[in-house]
Image (cartoon, rainbow, N blue to C red):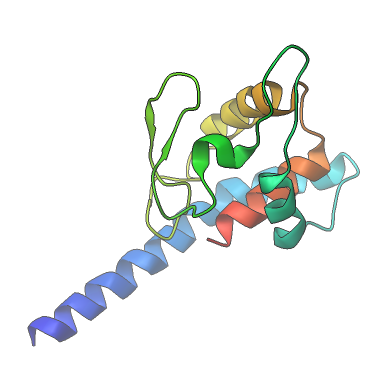
Length: 133
């Protein structure tokens, strides 16, 4: 009986995590599509996640520099050393649930990593990739 309850609890948590991330991400993807982006690709998002950039006057960096290649594991900020909770909604139910936070962190991280604002296409691809984890 305990195993069945544990399995049910895990399935319920995964279902909730998927539902909780659907609305804010879907709304943002719709916004990016209205700006001319799409269709979005988790594969393109994964490639962009690993791509190295060298913002003017900075060392080479990528999303993996802080968040790692396994989004189900914690990351660590390259400069400050601060722990970053896992990005994958499958293990971090709080990820991708707050649209304002998503917009804030995409803006901040694109500027820091790429040295510029991400395009609507890049943002959509990143969100599609992260949500798939």
